[in-house]
Length: 325
Image (cartoon, rainbow, N blue to C red; front, side):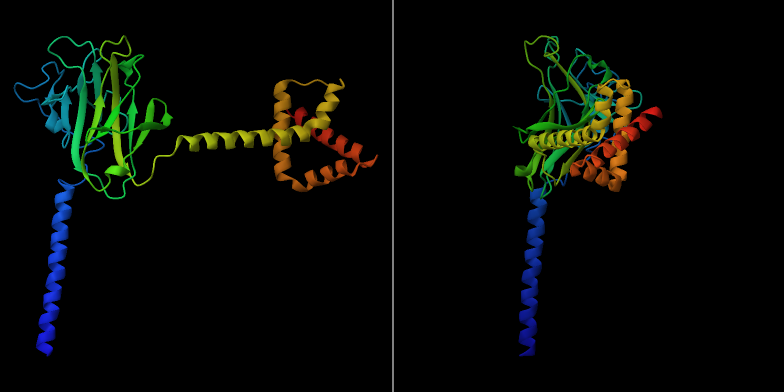
């Protein structure tokens, strides 16, 4: 019986082991080549472009495979073997590696994509980079940085992001100088292998600047956090407005006895002096609650003696604050 039980246990364990092996195999098959790589473009290396490289108009041409490992460089849907080593293009369609001396967004390298609708015959009109990898389970959004290069002039950056050819709705989260943080919801693709593409397209037949598009790209990342709804920013701004109004009302009530004296012509002050007094009164109110409470009580009491005394104390204090300006 003991031998039979041992054999039964071994059989059960083997089933578990086989199940785990099959699960790992399936997970590997689903994940394809693993998760996305070189999302900050810092794995670049500078190698001369191969003979007969495309696009033929690439300036200081370098190998696309070395400059952007894991990424596929395309122009008008055709795979390119070179990228521009000097991102100085305008009125050009290109994918360029921005390095030291060419204003990267951060780190040592950024990628610059540009598109020109009126490119001469034989040249390209749109550019893109893409990579096919596994999007981690639980991913909610994709975030990245873009910036307008110095040669952009009046051309506004207009990136297009797709997953398996499906455009992702992207929006600006914040901006610091010329650098914009953008994000888009990608939860529908979590746990799948997908092709991520960043496209730089233009409107055919448009006039400047609609016929041009150019931007630097950097720091792509998948996040487990959802993209904040636009309403969240509006509510935050509204909250700040109400807070400011509340502080103004507090200062106004605090200074009203003194301002009333000024209106009667006893003394005149500049707007900056009044502002400084208001700030001082606000700070005093926040740091001396007992004084504020006692004066408010005196005003509310309505007695003939106490209210004027409270008013005169407030006016005297405000005048003292201004006299220090």
